[in-house]
Length: 130
Length: 201
Ligand SMILES: Nc1nc2c(ncn2[C@@H]2O[C@H](COP(=O)(O)OP(=O)(O)OP(=O)(O)O)[C@@H](O)[C@H]2O)c(=O)[nH]1
Ligand SMILES: [Mg+2]
Image (cartoon, rainbow over all chains, first blue to last red; front, side):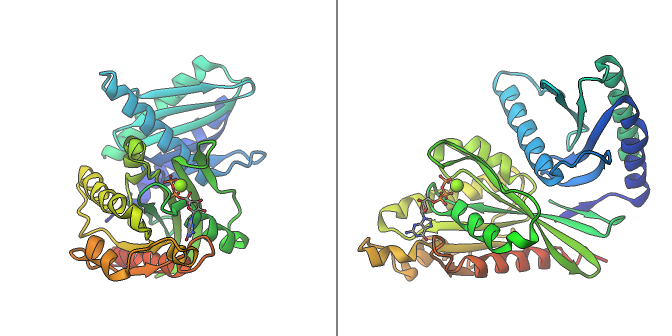
């Protein structure tokens, strides 16, 4: 079994990743499914992350935290945020099947970032539902 | 569930090595990684305990080449085999396209293999997947134990225990030295891709 997304949907999602999010300082952003498949990605030229491993670990990590949520009676956690000394990583669930992963450094304003991510998720959701 | 990217003409496929604890799943992946290392640009990811038991999974991606004009990208995973890690095992199985079941040939591990296969069936069912439908290959690993005087099960017994209903392809292996690892891997990739091929236009 497999699934696919229409070309215009993929184009739309890719455009959001590369036009909307890097302008607030996100230097790597992935749109993946919960199995760890990469649907769309954007990476700034000077960063070089291991994208497939990032996707696999993100999906697994999100899955694990959500299994924990259910155990303590939470429906789920739709957002996860890990803060580091220099780099940060932000996960947000999109519909039930997808995950938006954003990596950015500490130069970035968190408020603005959250706003942009929320907007991007809104647009991606619209695309996926259309 | 494989993701077919029509824009990039690319297919992403997930293959999971399943089986009882200490059966040799990680050893299979390590051998494949080492054999393919020239073609893989990244490190193998291993989330494990200090004692080298898999805690969550081992992982590496690998590019198979083209089929029907599509780039085939395979993602190989192992699960943690220890019974207590079922929650994480289930997570790794999400979206699986093909499974290798690695069973231990040692006589003393007989029951563990049977229970683990039963557990695979149950966990697949939680994702509405039927073990009879999913591309599946069995591997009877650690055949070399006999040389060290450790009693192993005859292949016929393992077939009877594990494969009498499934009737899927099986391979004998000694993953530690690499025997049977590549044939198992080739078979599961071929079966998994064949199961998707009709969806590639
Ligand atoms: N003699 C022998 N030992 C093997 C073989 N394959 C694996 N082993 C050994 O068995 C032990 C367990 O192997 P792993 O590959 O870590 O087993 P696993 O299935 O990943 O185990 P978990 O991560 O706990 O689920 C290791 O000490 C391996 O070296 C084999 O073919 N023959
Ligand atoms: Mg292991």
